[in-house]
Length: 224
Ligand SMILES: Cc1cc2nc3c(=O)[nH]c(=O)nc-3n(C[C@H](O)[C@H](O)[C@H](O)COP(=O)(O)O)c2cc1C
Image (tube, rainbow, N blue to C red; front, side):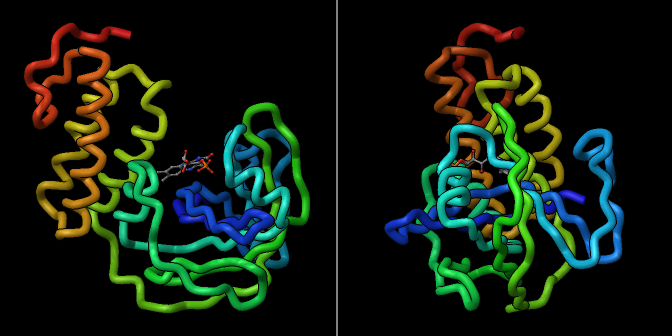
């Protein structure tokens, strides 16, 4: 199973780095789906294990290899996800309990992990971690479609240069349906930050943007 989390790492000077990451979880007593990691990767675990997969190059990868620790934060404030993708990384933190690290103050729960093994890869190394401490801070209040919309839009934005603009446009149009029906203030604010990034990207490249807000005067259609 992949959980969308906020991973906080630290460099050797103690500077914290916050980044959204999809974490592969090998749950207690569970067998991890081989399809997620390729043939032969299935494993029976006796305690929760986590695989963090940062792309090269990334600060998260450098910090984790250096410090061998990280904090995985479970967070329902999607502004943190959208914020990190739009230059807003300054979220309130507090010290971790068992490792030298930082915890997101708004996290519903967090797990402090230590790196136990690295499976190297040119594009996306697999960093296997074990939990050393987990704490709950606030109750999970249920699923919300607008939060899903923001998460998906944030992922699209993190791949803006890799996905054809037309596909991004179609997906944003679909995600907007759930957003408009169910969003609260936090989700609307996060969505606004993400849409501004897309509008700026489109304005820069001069490509058609369908009905993205504020992008109606864009010029040529991108069929890539
Ligand atoms: C929900 C979500 C999940 C993400 N998962 C990953 C991931 O597993 N690996 C990764 O390298 N980037 C992932 N990203 C993108 C990174 O958060 C973003 O590119 C970030 O800047 C990583 O680079 P950094 O460590 O240098 O900041 C994800 C983004 C979002 C919004």
